[in-house]
Amino acid sequence: MRSTYLYKSSLVIKIALGIAIFLIVYITAVFFNQMQNLGSSVDSMSNSNKKLLELHKILTVVSGNENAVRSYIISGDSTYLSDRFSPQKDLNEGFAALRKLNPANAKHFQSDTLQKLVSRHFLILDGIIRSAKSHPKFPNGELNLKLAQCDMLTDKIGDYVSQSLEKEAANVSQSQIAHRYEIEISIITSFLLVTIALFILLISLGRISSDLRSMKKLNDELRFLNYTFNNAERIAGMSYWKYNLTSHKYSFSENFYSLIGVDPDTFEPTFEGVLPFIHPDDRGHVSASYADSLKNKTPTSLVYRLYNKNGEMKYIRAITSFAENSRGELVKIGVNYDITEHHKNTENLENKNKDLLAINAELESFNNIVSHDLQEPLRKIQMFISRVEEFEYSHLSENGREYFEKIKGLANRMQNLLIDLVNYSRTIKGDKAFVLTDLNAIVDDVRQELSMDIEEKNAEVTIEKLPEITVIPMQIHQLFINLLANALKFTKTGEAPKVSISQQPIADGERYGDVELSDKKFVKIVVADKGIGFKQEFADKIFQLFRRLERETYEGTGIGLAICKKIVENHNGYITTESDLGTGAAFIIYLPR
Image (tube, rainbow, N blue to C red):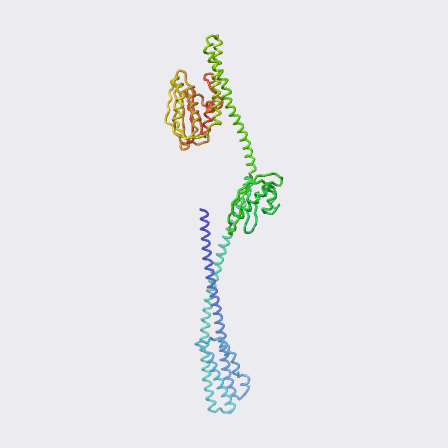
């Protein structure tokens, strides 16, 4: 959600900045055009003023020349002509300036027309001057005619110039209005331009400040992540390295050097720099594997030995692969694991396995001794006991018969103990083949096997339908033999034993220690009796080897329930018991489905 919000926020800011930049470009273009128009307006006003000045000069020259000629005619003083009469060539620069200032297509004023009028005016004045010089006292009719023509032409020139001046003045006035408008628009445009520029600057500064804070936060997180990763590398006993196949440059992590026991600046990060630390017997294999991996671009996984700076040998598992970086360059990435402790543990485990095999061999030898060597003399003792009982028992004294019964009981107890020891050892090392088995068939066999004890004690044995599960048949058979025999043995005096074997549902939240149990994973089987029971505080102790609660009243070896526990553990199951003294006991078995 946070990343989506940041993405949308960034997108909105980008759109806003894009619009603002577009407005700045647009307003800048408008402002540039306004500046050009303002310049054109200024140029137009300047041209009009210059044109007005030149027209005034021309009109002044025309009027001055006419007055000079009239003064000369009246006074006959030639100084009026020499000092106050301007020749026509003096106006050529003015007409040239007018032609430059006045566009060729101007309708209200034509400089050539004015120049022609002025030229005619000069011709008339020249004629008047010649006439005046020819008749200095009394002007003739021709002179008067020319003076009249000169007056008319002067008026015409004056009217033409006046009209031009009025039109130029109007143009100047319009240009001034346009100029003021352009200035006002330029001020507004400049204000908008500055305002938007400041707005963008503020947004940019805010964004830059936010980005700097975010970058600082990310840098802090990156430094902490790098610190965490380096610590994790050191704790996990691993390191990593990279090789860029384009730039041919290596990069080693700090812990890579730490595994070797040197500082990061001890040697350049290259394969050749690491090679001297590798065990001499492993260098060839490592080099060949590395070269083949680079050639075929294939991942590798190998184990080699490494010596650190102190000469301590380490076992390293190196795993490599290839990937492309953001520039599309192929990079070989390697991870090295320090498996020295794992290797030592494996060696220790192998040694313990060897010891365990030796112990198992001794246990097997013990089983053979118990099964054959010990039971053989015991069977002969029992054979002699039966002979004595058959032929010599009547000849024994009362004390002799008592001793004989004790000998007979101890021999039977010894035989039962040897049988239980053999059975217990078989549960530790025996047939571990799991087979899908019908528990009903096994329990039926057990009941048939103990039928004499059941009939002798007039016991009531109830067996409900049991499931099919995958078990070790012989061990499960022994499990039910021991539990049923145990229930038949520990009965109340004068009462017929009542035993039930049933499958029961596992309740919600039912547990064995920290293990949560369920019908999906386990089968719950309960073997319950109405016998003498025991105190619940002994519930765990009765499964211990050679642990007996009723030593004086009931015979037993203290191995039967220990065998039961071992059998259930062999099946990755659990066994427990619930009992109250005098009300009976229930043995609860959880076997995996």
